[in-house]
Length: 148
Image (tube, rainbow, N blue to C red; front, side):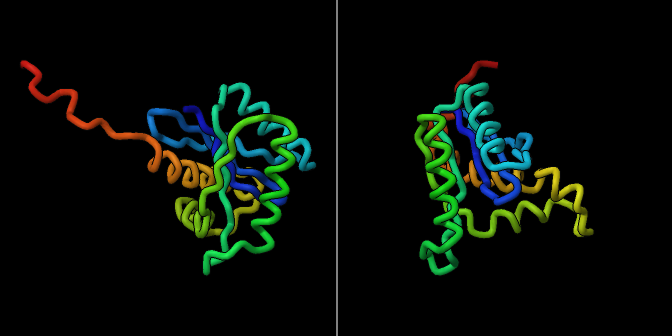
């Protein structure tokens, strides 16, 4: 399993990568000027990393309902699927951008925001949540009973 995590935004798309080891790592965000360029960047990343799955943050409302933002994500997913045929998993992303930004300076930094680093940190949180649910832990300690 090799996954690309996605934190959709109208101007930036945060991206991350994770595999069967079970650790999500932020990668460079898609910050191109036009949406089709951001999608092409994402598709190239998925192909370069030989991704088997895409994992996208899905912005449910706080009450669990699907709102306008979720419909934007659905439209974005359709555009991705027109370019690459991979399973796409929706993961509840409520509050991930807020949590991701806590690791950065509280001072408003427009360059940092434009870089997409916060968005990719959010994508890593989204993907980590997915991986935590999918990657099985070993049933026993592989070093147990090891002779010293």
